[in-house]
Length: 188
Image (tube, rainbow, N blue to C red):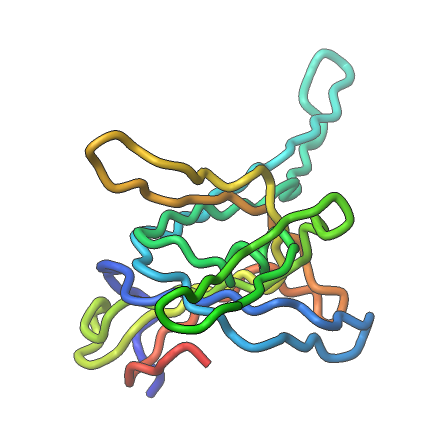
């Protein structure tokens, strides 16, 4: 007997992004190494539906609706230079020796590529109705919809965030997958 398809969704424990390295039509999408989104606070999905109506004879004759946009909004507590490079482009370089080590993310005109990436978030074990189970949300191909919220805040922590628009993979036409696991599984 299959597990229930209905569950509560409580909290977010982890999120990772993976650069999309290939998306061949009718083939298999491939991704680079997963990068942790540190201090994940929320991953919210929204979308737009466009409806067209056919009217005639002073009445509604037909109506069709299509998904015109799926968007994800992500907030996270810690800034990651590797995440910035994966979602905006640019390059991270490390230099120096202790006590003068540095990591620098540089974004240049040529390096600001806004590359596509996958994002996956997961609840903690027990964040669903299945004891010991979890729920994963995967957006298979997204690109930034605007520049990330970065910077500083007076006498407070600065929370980083970004929004991205999803599109279907050429490989298999997938936009979003929601996976309910009977046994909790780490993000691959």
